Structure formats: structure tokens, C-alpha cells
Image (cartoon, rainbow, N blue to C red):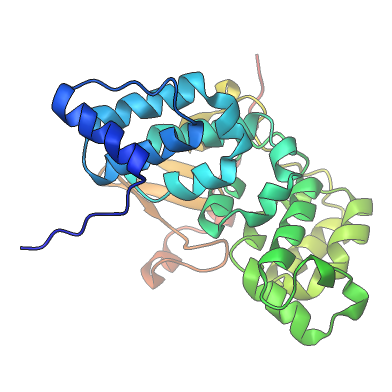
Length: 290
């Protein structure tokens, strides 16, 4: 039987060997990158106690380094369930003050999984138009043949918009367009009409051009005031989980399990659901703070 051993930095390997033979580990004098590599190596080698020790050390003692290297850390923590605590720490830290990260150069190199998990949150403390601006810049940087030098739309053709639309296909539905002012919509969103799916764009047009702007759907500012707060995700919960509206997904409980009624805002997960509930059939409640 052959075992495939991952590449491990010699310094990290020496620390691991000492830990295996003595049960002790001292990482206070090591560089933070070495400590992070030790975290990854201990996970790959199934050294659970060492992994937990290093993880907690990074969160408790090296918070600034994590914040300066969110892209590197997020790329790693979304790979496996074992990184859940560090993943939550990163996401919650960004959500509390996302502006520095979203507007940094590092944001443009964020991978798709990390970005999706950020944008699907309801508690990002940042204006929606700023999210849109950052998403467009990220999309341009991620689209083959584009790059920052090709950010001038006057030089684009139909294929340029099609390429950008393909890059941002999964992210556009996560934007809360109703939170964007009519001026920002006209100046910053409308020029990108070609990358927005037709049905979403029709909804946006209806919102801005009909008398529906009294509607307001906000991200949760303080999760402690959310009607429903589970695993960091905020949404609306009726009947103790019987009906949940969360992140643009309508879910209902059957036999104690949550099941998606819709795969996304337009597509049903299963054709059989079409005859059960529609948004129009669900009563709306006005919730006030007493």
C-alpha cells in the first residue's frame, strides 16, 4: 500500500516531528506564514489536537495577520469542514467591517467560493452599490482576456459583455438591487444591462419605474435583532422553522428537514413543488419592535 504524503515545508515538518515525539509545540517564535502552513499540514496529517491548538493561536494571537491575508486564509478555510471555526471567524470579521477588504487590491484575487459565501450573507455592513462596484471590478479581473487594463467599457463589444456575464452569472442574483438608489442604478448598474439576466433586469426596471419604491429589503445590521439567526445566516422564520425565507430561497420543513422550494429565485428545485406554494400565496406580516 502506498501513501501519498503532501509537501511540507522543512521547518513545519521539524515542528511536527518534535510534537509527535514530545507532545509539545512552541510556535511563538515562528513567522505567521509558517504557523499557517503548520495548520494546513496538521490537518492533512490528521493531527487534530495540534490543528486545534494552531487554529486557536491564529484566531486569538494573530488576528491582524489573518485580516491582512484574508484571501490566502479564505482560499484554504472553505475547502474542508475542519476549518469551520476559522471560516466563521473570517466571515464574521469581514461582515462587521467589509469596506477595507472589499476595496483592497487583495479582493480582486478572491476565489469564487469565498466571494459567493460573502455575498450570500445578510449582515454585510456595506452599501449595496459598493458591493456592485467591487463585484464588477472583480469580474473584470477574473474574466479571461480582460484584466484591469480593459475596464474601459467604450472599448467593449458584445463578446466582452457576454464574457463578463458568464463570469458573474452566479453572483448577480445575490445583489439586492432594491437597496440601490435610482441615481446609482442609472449611473452604475444600467450600463451593465447586458450582463444581468433578463428576468432579474425586468424586476429591477419594474421596481424603479413603477410606484414600488416604498419597498425596502435590508441586510440585517445587528443579528441579535434578527427574527431568525442560524449559523450566522439571517432570515425570516415562521412556525418554529415550518417556513423560512432566507437568502432569496424559500424553504419549508417536511418530516423535520429543511428542503429548498426553489433552486434559485426563478427555478423550482422539483416540478412537483409547482403545485404547492407560490410567493403570492404566503401571507406577509409586519414586524415591529415593541
